[in-house]
Length: 269
Ligand code: ADP
Ligand code: MG
Image 1 (cartoon, rainbow, N blue to C red):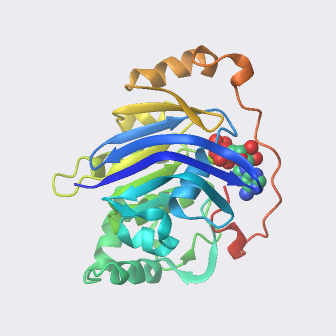
Image 2: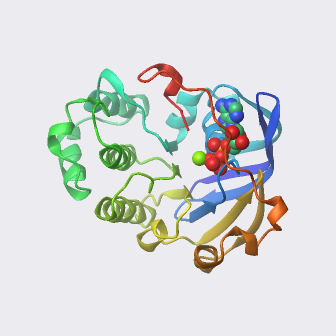
């Protein structure tokens, strides 16, 4: 049983406060959805929890089973059991998917015996083509194939808590069903149930991935929390039903372009 605890988290980018006091607790086996308009700070939350450079934590704490996550470099956060499925997965030329997963398992003190067979069976279960397994990570994959690849990595690494930043973006209906079903199954694993923080715009992700809690994030704050029915209300009424129109965030500002394929875009969101 693991718990990710976010308390009073405030964070800034380029001197602008984006997260303005986030409280959230995600435990093993729970699925929490975070929904909110563009620019609300959803990706910023995932970036701060995973330790993307360039984000300044102003206040608050993030702990995983009592360990101060914010004090750790990103790779140690991952090794401790935090996993981010990126909104825009990065292409890493020259680095093979199976090598990445082998190294990651070794770092976690786990055996790589049978990794090949595991990769093949996981790939089959989510419709990821086997021929992509020994190719450079994400290179030349379509948007949907990249998201299937992210889901495959999640299933192989078996973290304690996963943050999914818009797993549904770029996925067609079939891929969405395959990927969200796989995550749902992980959250129901009797031996080590995955805790999930699923960032999404659409309740369709939550058809297969059954959420226990829905939180609405607006302008860096969680303004409402509720059960799964909240996602359906949002789908029909939009955010205006929960916050006054003037409180709704502006569309996200243009960001500086990142150099394709460079390490700059490892966490691009
Ligand atoms: P969401 O994922 O909810 O759409 P983001 O977390 O990506 O929103 O962005 C929240 C706000 O922070 C936006 O106004 C965005 O422009 C700004 N922001 C995020 N990352 C950066 C960055 N690296 N540099 C400048 N502004 C940023
Ligand atoms: Mg985002």
